[in-house]
Image (cartoon, rainbow, N blue to C red):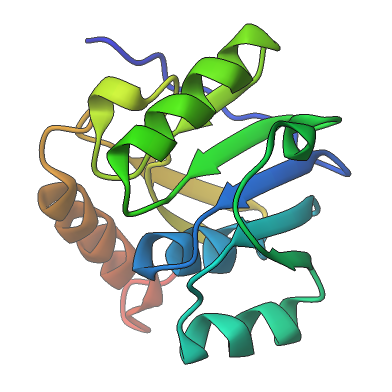
Length: 154
């Protein structure tokens, strides 16, 4: 195993999402469940992503990523469709001691975000260590079904 499963306290921590595609939208939706501050930086946001940003109340900058975007950041999700930009973000963030996740590119990940299911106060995280995301999602969905089925619910 390469990744240590941990739960990070992100309360009031500042998280950066660099990019505006599907992966960035998924990360924004996931982060909204937690009490953290989110900033989105990117040039090409889909209409669905723009709508989600408006609803989330997060800070958004429609422009290219720049080094100043890393100031005060706790975690980074590098979600650009350009691998070289993601590589640049990872290198610069790591130089500042900031951990980076690049969806669908385990080589550029310091941490992974597992498939999550939560029912307050419990949370279940399922990860394949980045090797089989679909299977992790399937397992998460099966676990969720166990707890949402009225016949089985504790």
